[in-house]
Length: 144
Image (cartoon, rainbow, N blue to C red; front, side):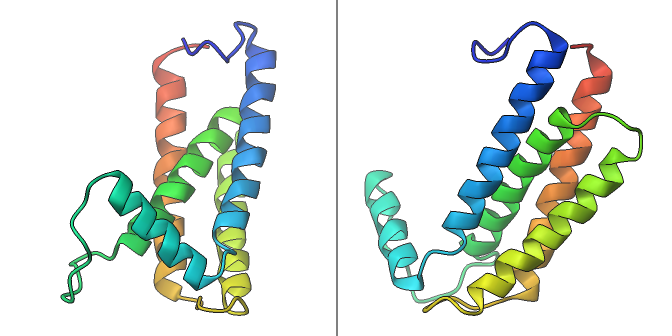
């Protein structure tokens, strides 16, 4: 078990809820950064990981979509672990994450160097649904 998660199930649920809300705030900040700053951060991460410089040919799946799906996967997994009841909570969480994805894209439409994209919302939704689904599957396979 992770050391920062308490053994008491209700305390663990509260911890997941705090982690989920904190992570969603971080996602909101990250997806609201200006385009120039995002480009600088991307170059910094590439240098840090010793990745080759960007080529002129576009990749099959843009890194942007993977980042969106990854962020919403983590958000979905944390929310799925934090809100296990009532039984219909999964659908409410999925709808909430979809609305949150739309909000982030709406914000990006007004941020310099960023743009709104239906593809990003689709990547967000896919990541969120997989995260929610896996968190529920993991919860059914073991009691916590």
